[in-house]
Length: 199
Image 1 (cartoon, helix red, strand yellow):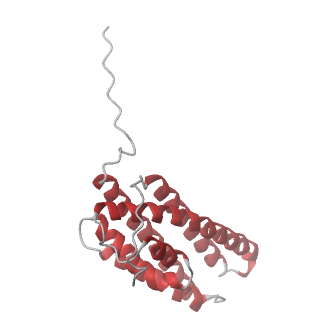
Image 2 (spheres, helix red, strand yellow):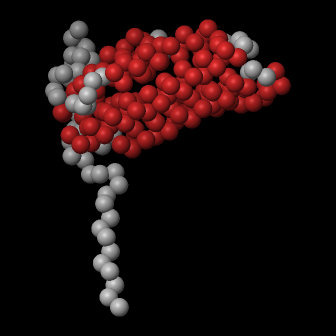
Image 3 (tube, one colour):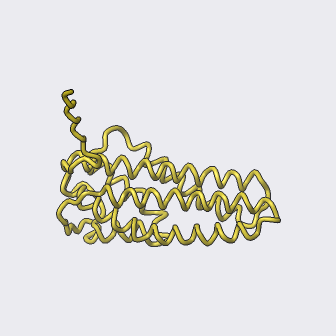
C-alpha cells in the first residue's frame, strides 16, 4: 500500500482544455462503434463495418494520451483541494486507468476518489452508473462479437452509448467542480456590454 498512498503533487492546472478533447474523442469513438456494429446486421455493409472499426480503434488510441493528460491534471488538482483523500497515488491512478484489464478493476475506485476529493456536490451515483456501464459494455462486446442478431447487437450499442454519455457527464462534473474550487478563470469570460452610441 506504500505506492498507493505516495503523493507527488504538481501545482494545480486548469483541466478544461484536456477535458473537452477527451469528451469529444470519447463520443466519436462510441459513434463509430455504434455505426460499425449496426452495419454488421446487413451482410452488404462489410466495407462500412471495416472503416468504422478502424476509426473506432484510431479514436481509442487517441483517447489514451488525452486520458493521461486529463487524469494527471485532475489528480493533482484533487490533491490540492483535499490532500490525502485519494486512495491511489498518481502512478497507480495512471496505470489503473490506462492498462487494459487493470482498468476494469481500478478505474471505478480511482474516479470515485477524484470525485470525492474534488468535492463534487451530490452523491456519486453518476460514477457508479458510468463504471457499471463500462463493465456491461465489455461483457456485451465480447458476448456479441460475430453476432448478426439484432437484439444482442442493439443491446451492446445501447450500452456503449450510455457509457459514453455517462463518461462525458463524469468528466464534466469533476472538471467544473475543480475549476470552481481552485478559482480558474471562466472558460467563456463575460463580454462587457457595449455602451449605446449617442445619436
